[in-house]
Length: 393
Ligand code: 3PG
Image (cartoon, rainbow, N blue to C red; front, side, top):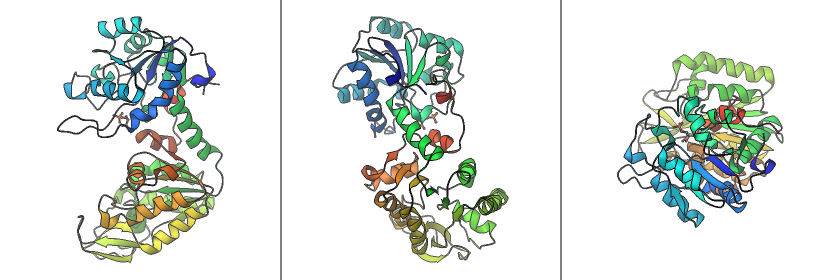
């Protein structure tokens, strides 16, 4: 796909889709992490330095097509301005009079931000009339919102019908690193999957069994696999309607010669609580009144050994309930193993990205995706509407 480096951006008016869907404090509305704003800076700077006039836009939260004061992008404009060290002109509407007049007056080297795209019900409906109005303000569309490329909305896909569309530096890097890992990995390629539910990861497991040499399954979803193999899992999380699926995946791994690693021991607790009494037990013999909340020490060893010998590691989903310190050891050991390995290491967004950052390993990971749902759909091998709409090289 073409990027901003493949086209002439000098002096151009550019509609730039960012993912400024930042977490906010519920009570005060204050931005609690500006990671996504920081991630957009390289593209913004690249464009402004070349004299482009940048009309930035994003959604924030789920206002469902209604104006909602608590979800205005005004605080994002302020933070962006501080980070960039220059004024960010804020439009009080999206494609209304204020936005259109400010966009028309915007000079090269200046940047403005439109109000929350999802205040207009046409955004999520991918209504061409809305896409056309957005496009009418600019000469080129740049997608740098990796977190939303899995959405077929007016600003993420529809707009490409009206403007030449290329990716920004963030989307380009996400596609290059994650695409490279899936299509042409340095082997052995080890995929580490965790998180609570099998149903969230069904297509990811299936797709990665076609690509990886080793697939590791930890976290809550491992108990569905344990039960599928006849184990007693006590009160652990289990999706009974996914037992057949788990068996199919075990068979698929055998047929493909993919090593499928499942937990052999578990840190089981009497209740789902930070201070619950706990015990290390075999994963297939968890006492009836206990539930598994983390992988056990033997499993840590098994999983981390596999990661140590890898050429490429992709990790999505925590190994246990790392929000509780007592049950964070498995996730921490995995983060450490990725950081210490000489492999190309990729952490899919969401919980595992948060864990790696909180635990202080972020700067020793090759790539931490800015996408949550988007990186998951990427790992599923799905076509992403926000990528498919970009110009081919
Ligand atoms: C995200 O936070 O994952 C993206 O900004 C997408 O948000 P959405 O799930 O509301 O579409």
